Length: 305
Image (cartoon, rainbow, N blue to C red; front, side, top):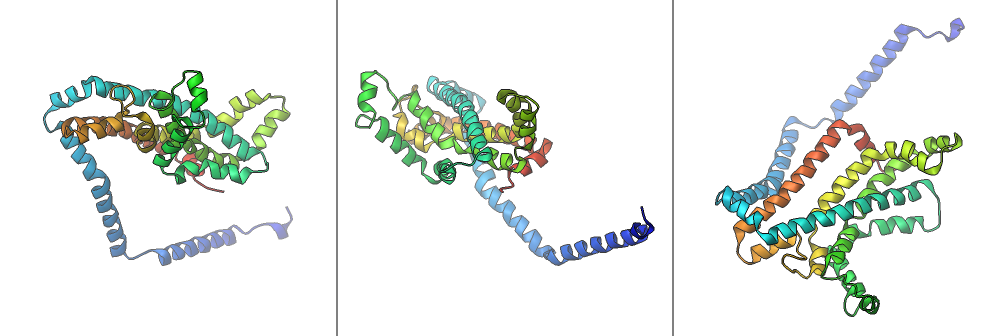
């Protein structure tokens, strides 16, 4: 290297020190007073304690207020077991379908340009904007006795409303955006370079997806699946419209809790609510574990382009 182009190490270190001082000064300028920081933190803790921790503590107190035996008896009741089975059955169908549809939708939007792309993005967000009760009503207008498909369903002796298919369809609609919305920004940020390189080396579409695409999106996919599962197990509004509230047959756990509470059986209602809260806490622990182990990948997921 010519002498004129050699860098003076002292000058480089001096510039680096000045840059660090400038960044430190900027941070000092942005720092808020200590009393304001403490006040905001205390306010956040109080709000979370009042809106989240206190209600959860009251549910647990109501569930175990008469002892563990009464809690166990409430959960061992046939209607409660049927509601739990239906909740898990619905989640077991909805989660894989939404995972598959979410991956395909994200791939189409992130990798291709086509007319109507913005409209498709808006449709993906539609379940976030529409009330779940309205979604359930739409299913009634489609599959009810006076609905568009009523005659076809009657001819083929098929039942959608007030049966498991209606509950699954309502839950699918409500939970569809979670996986797709986690994967779309991630795949757009990653770009298609690695996939194009795999295709240029002779990999077919399935091999490219299995060896390149899926490993790149696996943590975003798992994050979306966790959110989808939590919402599927706790969905109330849309399922309430299409279920018919048939005890032991079409009641999920949230609907079972409502019926018990309306019948003034508060201990059994709180017991079922504690089970649902336990499922939510398991999901929350898995979410925290995922973020702690793969925080950088999760942060990338939430960087909207």
